[in-house]
Length: 292
Image 1 (cartoon, one colour):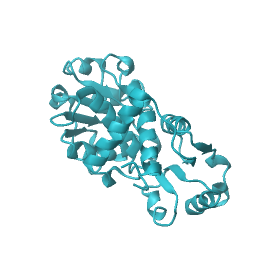
Image 2 (cartoon, one colour):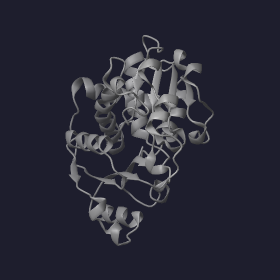
Image 3 (cartoon, one colour):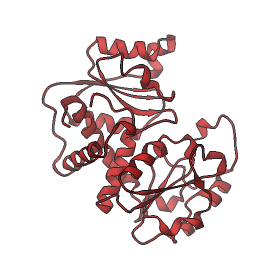
Image 4 (tube, helix red, strand yellow):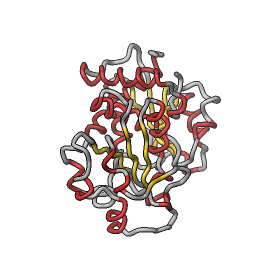
């Protein structure tokens, strides 16, 4: 595997291999790579969890991390993403971790460069390492995906998390249900009533309302969205005893999820964040050493 740009490129066997490697890292610690590699993280959209966990993983792997700040780069002078990538390749970077607002930005790059690219999120397209850390968290909890029912609820149409997780979960044996306002269902077949599904879920995965992708369209106030489509404390009482709550974060407290539930006993949100370091280390190691 030279690049990781989409969950669609991974077989079930490759997914399980990455999850197993992340599990080893979590239990035994992340070991430095044999040899020296240089990475740069190109984030053209804001990020806290993804960028910082990639950098933590890179440093634990013993990689040299070359700083890059989009707001101070030649992209402000009109340089294309391709030319930025070729420049970094020319000065000796081995791997680029890229987040970009354009869907499928990587399609112009992966056949035209010799370095490796890890997609850290493209527009409303894919976010493969987020999907992998979600899968890792679910597998830690249940040991399997077979027979699980996973509800993905929220701003589905604009969510690269929903797209990345949907096919992977189904291929691994889980049933996936989508809940969303009709305005934000996109190409997904969604239900729009919690009462129809809440009692049958093993995992409730909530999604942030992505205000930045709505181009000024406002369908709900925070209060009305929470009342109709958020996971309220009252709704959470209807969850099965073993059901866990997940969220890729950042979360809008009191919008898609009640404030109390974020750190409640059912929540695995901060465990997901922790697991992101181990998954991203597993991905980088696999790409750079050809582990599987």
